[in-house]
Length: 62
Image 1 (cartoon, one colour):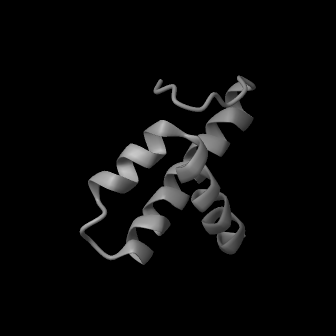
Image 2: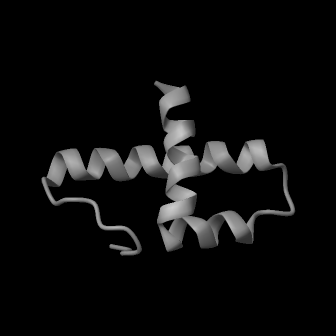
Image 3: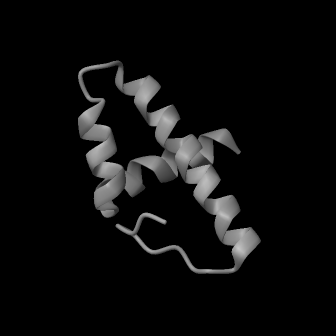
């Protein structure tokens, strides 16, 4: 499951401006560590979508 979220994180960086800004903010650090952090954020957003039933919107923070 982790590998799927890591792959999805690379796509989220390209598609979601919030994730892209987070990636660029932490870019001087190790990129592998950053992508794992983004995968964790993506997993928590996925869980929130499952719990609330509200569809995911790229670029929206709530």
